[in-house]
Image (cartoon, rainbow, N blue to C red; front, side):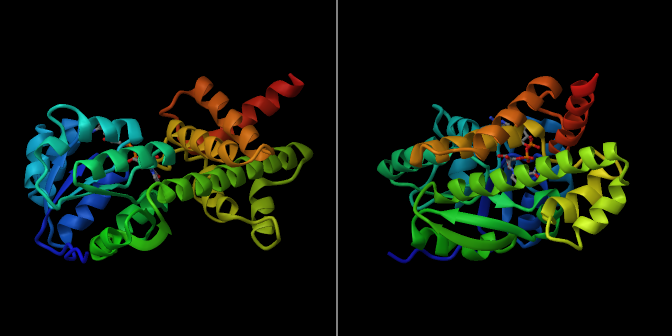
Length: 303
Ligand code: NAD
């Protein structure tokens, strides 16, 4: 079945105006979509509506009833399930043919279950998590990993392209699986580059010189090329991506790897490291704070 493409001025319900959702929803408003938004943070909602003219509601059923597409950009799939499925939630108000897009980084397994439950009720849900951080959320340059029914993804293509580049990953949950895999690599390169730089510095090397050399050499990565110059070297631990969210993504990555193979060296270690860092620094520390956490641990080693 061909589903009509979602074009402006279709009404988009957007739930979750945090570090990522706010700039993403703003791009959709600027592209001519009608927005109806909701978030527990009323300050963010009021600011967003003042800036864009969007409607706000705390009544999720009303948001569902008015929307052609509902996008969730929440901490995880548990929050998504709550806003969609609770008694007066989004789904209770949805019109036939409405589409749900979860752009949060959620558990791939839970997403599959949720999408199946929604399908039984006659609604299509795709998972479309993103990578690129706040900078790419503002510029519309995100990588979007879309899992689910191909016709539904095609119908949402032009809408999603306002936010970034769309990669179809396969069936339901595959976008969330891809996102967990990406963040496994992203967190790992950050942590191992940190450990290397901390050790080199203790040996007497200059961190900035080390990063310049690594970026001209084979040890480079997105972490050395972007996160170190932008955040670690100037000691700005304000990337806009919380440590607790990264630790959550690594638990999803570990569960994914554990579900398909017994041999698992790195994902165990990296997930444990971020869990320990979260326990010490709290979930609202920045993910770049893994560097300070490793510095503390390196200091304690010889203390
Ligand atoms: P955030 O904590 O800044 O924003 C989450 C928002 O959801 C908050 O405004 C919060 O008030 C709202 N919220 C939470 N529960 C709610 C509920 N039940 N009803 C309504 N609103 C609710 O997080 P973020 O950084 O914007 O991340 C959102 C998602 O995107 C997460 O899954 C995260 O892992 C993922 N992500 C983040 C980044 C990043 O760089 N920050 C990058 C890629 C993906």
